[in-house]
Length: 87
Image (tube, rainbow, N blue to C red; front, side, top):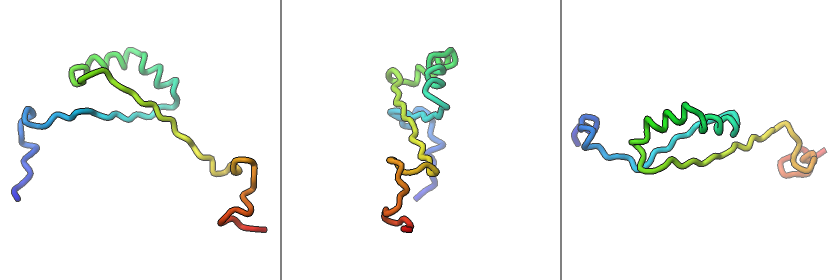
């Protein structure tokens, strides 16, 4: 098998991806909404519009933080649960 020459191919010969995924993290939904409506986002949209086959699509996911110091749901102590220390 010969050396990988894919990097040497001209840009026109490289396959074009069908979609791109962008992942970003925000302090909160309001921060993202403010950015999405702002002039910086509008400028970015103008600069990359020629790369898109259609309008951008978004999916907002929120993290679910687990506070390990908090008691279990229902206020129980966890006693009697499998793996817990019984008194």
